[in-house]
Image 1 (cartoon, helix red, strand yellow):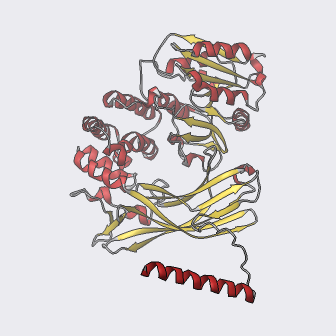
Image 2 (cartoon, rainbow, N blue to C red; image 1 turned 180 degrees about the vertical axis):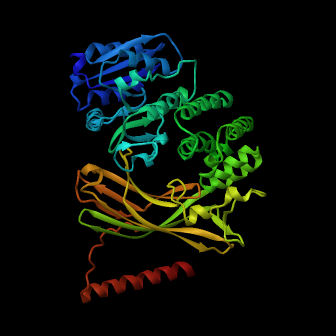
Length: 531
């Protein structure tokens, strides 16, 4: 194998991975890209179990597998940097030791990257116990930019980078101890410097998994002060490459929504220790005041805007009240009709959002504004004002949406389906308004997932509005016997068919015998009751 022939170098940091590596290794050995066109570089971070010996055995058995043994650093940054320094491929793909790749991932993503001349190529991800950026993978994006695509929703490093691009800009992971958000430091700079970034959405490339027991080192609870110090360093990267204005505000919004507001929502906040919450609220408030222009929070949906505003004001008790309310938010969806015609399944649904026994609702003020009704008092009107997002919002983040998602049971593949929908504002019996969603989609099982449809599928409706989002499974069981096969659809609302009963004889002699048996049965019952 010559260095010039290598297309991809896969870099995998490991630490005490043990048998947890097996699924990843199996997926690497199944790659459709020929073994002489890619290499795998395992960088072991001072494991103390059998992992080093397992890796050495793999390298001895497979010439395109290599192992670097490093002193313990305690964080994945240094192992990844060592792997990049050793890499010889045209592109570098980062993979974690508890994740795995789809069989054609390297071939498809490399082909897509070279076809479009990309510095960064992002393959569709599926989460197994971990969240992944769903909206980014709605469609293929051969030339995605920070201005027209939600790239900032995906800041983990599990992507394919042109190696020359990494070298030209000295893109490396920070190695100053256990720095949180180490992926953000590299990937944010990469997005801002990339000449072209592409997103491959029509094939699942990467399976992102949480290690059994949840003992991923970087998944441990954050220490607020150090975490937000690192976050502000990432904001420094954004500020160094952008000017004040709408683009910078939109980029900053990503960290406000996901790293700050999301930590103060629903069951996640309600179940957190109070001293930890106080620390997070203090850091969020400081960051909002010191680093964000007014347009950052103002561009959020009403619920997220309210949480950010209450955190800025230090109103922790009110945050707990909203968290309890939000933990009860559910999507109530009704399957109105469905029809299977050949390979095409058409579904119509309607739905609403509720919290407990009351709808998620809006109060209308005398001047015509519509305010999100939340279980807190004395909230500044500008925080809960939904008028723009209910009437005129053009920002996808703030606009109410209805999505239908098809999910394959065996591997978790998810696909957004093309949906036509409308959202009505209707009065409810407690006063005020609530939203009603109505939508319709058609699924062609000859083309869904490129015709790879074998298996059982679940259909889910997702309602989004004013910062709330909830899913509801539709009562349809869909199964394809083979790829591209006509689906079998079972309505789970219908009772199972009764077993066939043997035909009853209807001749005169049979009728006489039944009459005699019935008369004898009644006589026996009377004799028992009167004895």
